[in-house]
Image (cartoon, protein in one colour):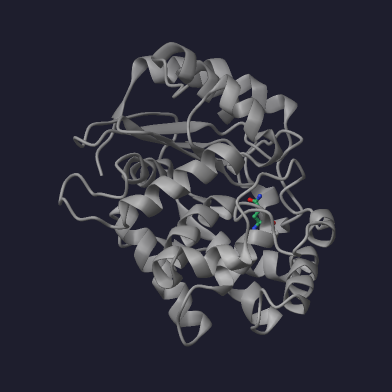
Length: 309
Ligand code: GLN
């Protein structure tokens, strides 16, 4: 994959990088704690194949919550809207991504949206296949097609590290099983979910996936519709309303594009019909978003007039 280093982007990266000193690396998944807090990189991929970048764009990181958008698309393709939204809602929560609170107070008892952990666990549960391996391979094949990179795989070390410490996600899953939104064995689901979250890529891959969403699910090079247009649009809508956890409102005001973050420090942006963005900066703010990544996106949004609103 060729992507050209871009002078202005490099300047934005250097301007945003010091912000990382005010953030913290997520270490509740112990293996994530090894990242270098001041890493910061960005790639922008256009539908015509042009790609511009800054920073160490080959550095690999795990998708974590960014994978939730992709499994949502696959679960919708597998089951249709009616089944999926029988088990997960469409409203932002205002709570942290791993909160258990609203599961009990929301009536009927189902997760409020697919971008919080409770909702994402239900969505992963809905991915079809006869075994964890088969379901994981389906998720991986879909991601490889979106990224146009057959080498994408998951990190065994990070998946295992999360599996060993996923007590809260197990609690969410047991609660959801009690309410019949999950019917499989919880450890089996956590096995699949932690592997999905540990899928590894770099900013170039992430920018390309963001570009496919920006193009409503179509690969502009081959004209293949990788996912139906209606599903790509639905996913982008969730990215706007819930993609940056409980900071999605402020993000919509300050930056104004569909985006999804993960606790490893990745952010995927999708500027409709313009380009895809992949960012990696592992130091996080209090909510769990890449702190320097947000600063960088603010610079981009104001300089390149990205806001959709
Ligand atoms: N794997 C992580 C978890 O479930 C994903 C969370 C995130 O990126 N916010 O805790």
